[in-house]
Amino acid sequence: MGQTFVGIDVSKDRLDVHVRPDGAAFAVSRDGKGLEALVDRLRVVAPVLIAVEATGGFETIVAAAIGGAQLPLVVVNPAQVRHFAQALGKRAKTDPIDAEVIARFAEAVKPEPRAIPDEATRLLSELVARRRQIVEMLVAERQREKRAGNVRVRKSLARHIKVLERELQELTDDIGELIRGSPAWRETEDLLTSVPGVADKTSSSLLAELPELGRLTRRQIASLVGVAPFTRQSGRWKGKSMIAGGRAAVRTAIYMAALAASQHNPVLKAFYRRLVAAGKPKMVALIAVARKLLTILNAMIRDRKPWQHA
Image 1: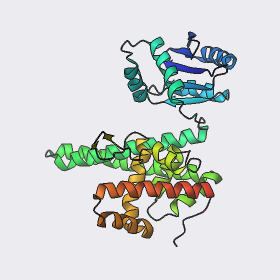
Image 2: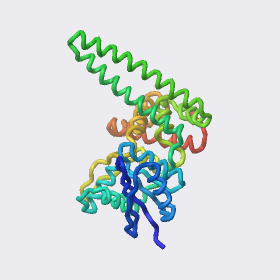
Image 3: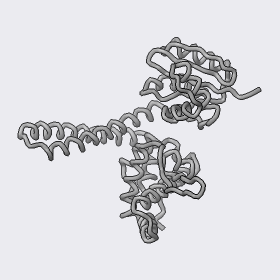
Image 4: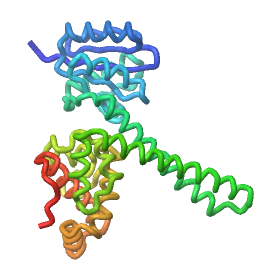
């Protein structure tokens, strides 16, 4: 008997479901009754993988219901599904068609299922994301303050900046309190921050947004974060290798840590200087440092061993 794959397209009020390879399709409402019916039908189908497209947060309750039923689930990137649909020549776009494309994507690509984060991890992730938003707003407001010529506008901006700074500090304190309240997180944070160049902000981002750290190979973790270069070559033409995709927030956190590590971490500082001395552009060398740093952190969490200066 062949393997069964399920694609689910999520909208505000309903879920369209498609089953591969038999082509069965149905829809349920996106509420408690509909989710209960969905889980019951999925258990009968017994799929090897259920793919749900990320849809601005609407997929969260669906993923929680499916994951809570111990069914194999993956939340897929909408951009990847769109590119896959284009490759299939699927120009029409309706919810049932989207569900079929998602199911075919799961069948062809077979992305790795992910465990649903528990409530504490989701809370930490939301706090970290909100802190990142506050930082972005602060940067924008400070830039506006520098450019403002009107005194009243400058005073308004200054007041708002003070409010944002207080909110930023409160969020930072909340994140620290949440991490210190969990023995497992506290131990992991201690391991991460034992590396010169990795600060509390980086460790909290990794805890919240990269739970796979320490569970994957170095190539898998680099690809997941988006710091693994891919080759661009066709015939005799060979383009520059590039990085793309992955988890942007984690990639940014690792890159900022790599900037610090390239100056203050003896091992990574020497690695960075060797690359630059060999003629590598500084940005390429920094990406290589970020990838090496991520590999080191992955091994440390896997082996539960702190940074060794030697």
